[in-house]
Length: 431
Image: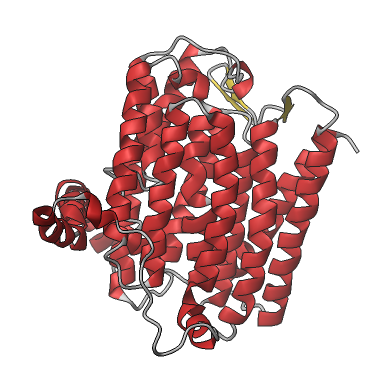
């Protein structure tokens, strides 16, 4: 079987689950729980088979392979087509998806037994898998941005999965604002690539090439990667994302979604590698995020939020590795970290039971942390530092005041303007 055929089958299979559940939700057709659950399991196993087939088909090729469709549409002489690139990065990420996605789907089956909105959950999960396949196999910046946005939308909708909980809706808005602000960086870099290179595909972005780009474009790529990976100053939303179900926390904020920032930087490395200032900024952002997340995470009383800050700290370390040019190490780190966090998030709800059933842990055993970071600071610093960490160093309030609230106010004003403009038309249409 040719590699191009395997790639198209993989993309089509990822889209199949979205089409079936999406049409059912659109038409208001309630599907049986057993049908939806078995369909999700079959869909996840099909992605495993597809990933193995892509890996086996690509191994004989020593160079990246670009699989392109015919032009889908043309505007003023510029045509757009779907390009998919098969190389070391895309194959590794696709195999990571195949390893992580099926266990999370299987874990979610009993968790959503007779749960209201379960069909909506499975649709969002399948849509998320489709977006990830688009990102990981993307051969041009347009397909990458399509998958990037799909992942962001499904992430926000899963944070607000429990619709009757007002806090879930509020936290999803926090994540949405952070995503949209940083997406401007990815969109700006995409526009620049369209105007600079003869094509928008990634064939000219080879691992051994260093391309002349402006610092503005390199900075836009770095800024675009911050929100998805919860790096400073776009870190305040991650602990709020724990409002979603445990399985969505595992697949989004433990394994796959949070690693899209490093994947973006790995894919576009030749565009920012020549700029020492951007690499220094990347390293400083990663270092400050790692320190910030470590300090704040030690004050969190619940397992999921503590894991969220531990994930944030490790992602900061990955950003440091990228800034140092250790791209192979960063890719290995992404795969290992995703697997570890998936297991930890899935087991977070059973943590108390695990300790109760552990024969080595009795009532007389006092559990203590092995590390004592506070000893690194003078005694006079420890109390104010602990109090600041309890408040997340006031980052949450600052982000909402200077970023979230203005954006929400802008769209509220636009909604009032729309109502005022369309008001006469609505009145004329009334009986």
